[in-house]
Image (cartoon, rainbow, N blue to C red; front, side, top):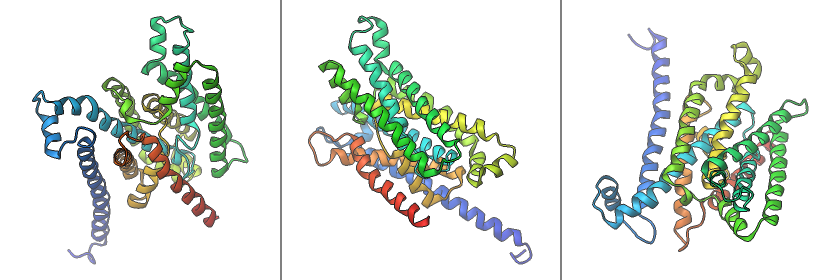
Length: 357
């Protein structure tokens, strides 16, 4: 039977081709991530070829290469995968929920609030307020920093959500509200640095740089334990997000509880941002870069946009980390590189929105 006899066959074929093209893009990006990761693991003071890297990963020869790969470089790559995926998927969800293409954990002030919370934990542990007890070690460790970071990140989310409920709120004004929130917590962070002692100040300043080398296998386990259930929830709600993209009225008519979806999705996205900040410090614009690049490639369908953004977030961090290690003997923290990449994109989006208006 020809397409003229069965008109649905042609549409089914076009849809299958359309779908396979999107999946092919995602698979190609995953392959590119693997290639970049292998070359990145060979970079550094102890240079290794791709074959030497693969040998060190899959064979325990007891060589220096094994130690370098498993103790230093592989945790760094795993951190890029987990943090890049977390920030990108969080940015994708925030842009959908708030109907704002500029929304991300960084631009909404959530990363800044989480940074302030983590710095408070470092200050409490470092100033002897807890008398050098085991509690001080917990507060200043990954669990304590994550808890403090999450608490202040949720405070920032609450402010943004409450502002979005006001009648005068627009997509642009919500970003400005996020800038104001980030400024407030930035001032708090500066004040904290002014009053602590020199050793605690050094710890806070060093930690603020978004640096993947800080990650340990234990820290990565915590991020993985948060990322998996959060990303599964986001993907299960992919059709709800498509409905929300069409408008709140459309979502409500389809039986979606928009208020509940806003609270749950923003909470999970904030948890992801807070844990990432607690582990590696502030890494800006990944939650903006990943979703915007992939929207141009796979479109706005969240069935494909969510996983594609996670892969692109990973690729952005892998490339930024490699770029930061190429020209200098001492690697440039990846947070600095992503800021150089994300700043121009942020301005481009603002100019584009202004022309549309």
